[in-house]
Length: 291
Ligand SMILES: [Zn+2]
Image 1: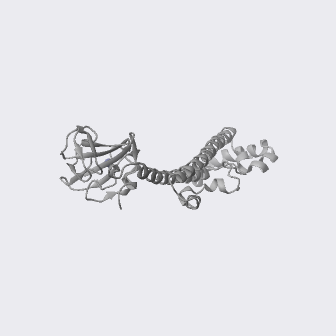
Image 2: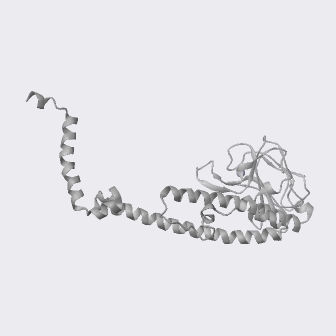
Image 3: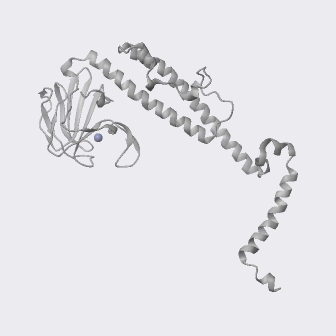
């Protein structure tokens, strides 16, 4: 009796659990056909609800893998189109073929046929994540490359003084500011359509090319902003200014001071937010700045 009393609550709990679980495991072992255990391993010993939820999550993974394969295949078709465009822009054919930015996806190369994601086994979640990451990186690389090709085509088709290729401010730009990035205000990933130059309030902002001021006004997000129309669908925008020094309708020349750096509107500190747009769509300004 004295010994039984010295049993702690934890020990007693474990004993009860073992006594209950042992017959359950034994029953499972007997009611599960041996051939199943051989095929599925320990999975066959799991209760049916858990087993079917594992199977259904594999069904989901398979569906995602299929969609991913389709995306990869679509990207390959886009690659062929990109190569044709690069050729039109005057890129050397050998340079296009050897371009690391247009390198085919690993998952597609393995079997040498270029078919979409042909695999001998079902994809695991880890493999699926790796394939998504690879696809994301490949899309980013193509984004960059096609911006370069677009810049090349524009340089050929636009008058020299109308192409916004001079720096709008005498300051360094934050190279990672253009493109997909975390929004400093809400923490979501969003496409940032301009290039940010950090500069002191009052630093002169200059027109990047000849043009006509299409607007010079105050807006909630951009703060004080100047927009310059350069013809051929090209427009530059200079935002968050402390001071606007031109008016809508005014003709400006390349290098002319149009505003001063500030932190008006949706801004976290004094900087110039600079955009180049072609027919309303943002271009990568880094491709147009003389470096
Ligand atoms: Zn910005």
